[in-house]
Image (cartoon, rainbow, N blue to C red; front, side, top):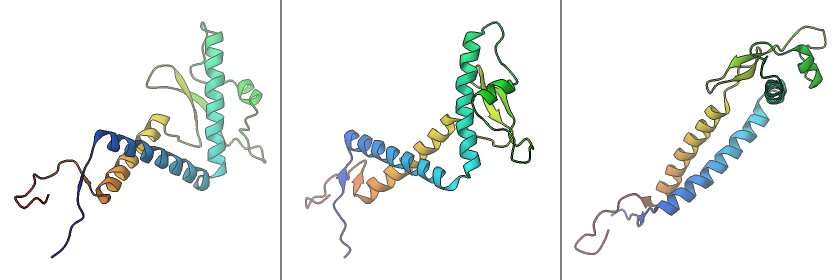
Length: 154
């Protein structure tokens, strides 16, 4: 006869704490893997896009009558210390503005197509939910316990 481990009822508190811990662990793991596996050039490009997003937002607030909507001026790119050419002088990165889904504009790069932060967070959340469910099921938790049997076992 195969003996089963006793199952435990899953409470909201235990489930939410497990999900939160799993989300933090998955987020840190994915971020670390990105730093380790992505090429240095792509990481620099992501940093440059964040810098440009801040500079464009500041410019658009300071100049509401003539906001930037398509091209980013070369002077703005150079003032942030962003390199767009390689050692031979060939243009590798071209930064431009694209309409964002929530209104306004966001900078993009011709060399690297980068997912929005919301999509990355959704991926972390999906991995965290799967990890939480696996952890809880392997730990013996269940959503619904069967009614006790006549001999007192569950």
